[in-house]
Length: 63
Image (cartoon, rainbow, N blue to C red; front, side, top):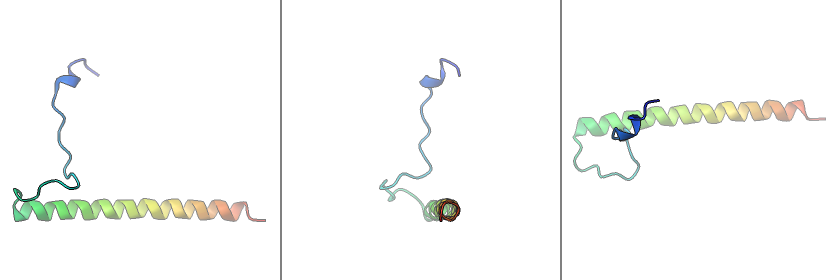
């Protein structure tokens, strides 16, 4: 890591919850919807994986 990395401006995230949407075009709004839908799917997959792991652990320690 270079000492100059801190001087670079941080790139904004692709979408910030609660941000002003009035300046975005319809295409940009559709792209954000698609991005957020993909993120929701990723979160749901992680929830399912964790629930599966928890259920397996509960079954392992069940007497």
